[in-house]
Image (tube, rainbow, N blue to C red; front, side, top):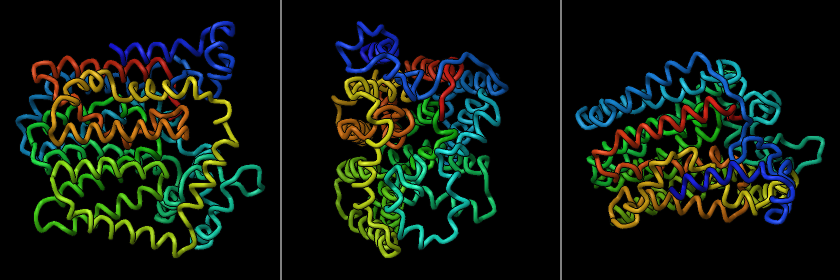
Length: 428
């Protein structure tokens, strides 16, 4: 109930009159809503339907009626395939509510996105050497908003995709969906690798049918979510004997993650949770080696991560951050995240904090990462998208709820997603 109240208040405050809001927040209602008209979500109010609507409803109904039982009965390999397929179908059906072009193709093709810069990258080593020089705004060659706000790994991902002949918004969005929806598999693989297959099976429907799928469809953060999600999953796999190659691979993915998004350094918390749950530190050796290899390559080509991090903080406050009051966004960020998580996640928190088992530790680690990200004041608004890599692990929480209630909670999850996607047009 507290989570629902927080979300409700976060939606109401930006529409209070000046005389009511200014004593609380040193901004007018319009200033609070700037760049986020549907605050706390980034988008605007628009009741709409699309050809994805009937498919989304069918998937939602099927998932609620049969999801928990299917997850319990399927063989493990088939469950993994079913989870990924369900997550992909759910994500795409929600995107198609907005339509093929507006809901999928054009989202990553705006002038603020990575694809806008791709044609200008003709020399990757030169780009890496001069990347930090173009982070700050108000220069003739300043990077676009999203490129400047992230390390070069994000931009290079779409450059490499383009060089494979897969250019344009559709291919970029397809990559994000393909990798992002695989994260639903990564989390249950991690839980099973830590010795709790029962909880992994119980979590599968919630991971596949989360409201977060709205933002997995068309944001680069979906790609980041899949990359670091599998990094943690491989680390969990490596806790078994004689699986050191998995620990190195985990380090490579987690190391690449911090070159996709500066904030993903906080993925060290879920990684730490894995080691605590497995009661071992040996996989850390391989993971550090893998991460250092990635860091060494970027550094050798001229990009120093710490320089980029310092400059991006300055760039952040050159733009809209100054117009987004932390007095509102400090707590509205959490409300936005709850929109992506759904009410089943906070409902499970009392059980999460009263038991010690692998799934609980992973949820707590995701929550801790969110708290630290929020306190940094480097994420004001858009956290329903930006915090997807952390939300991924929090989506495991409903598995600890009584099994007999799972259909009820799943129903609330899918209803929330359908309501958000039909009542609001989200920018991602």
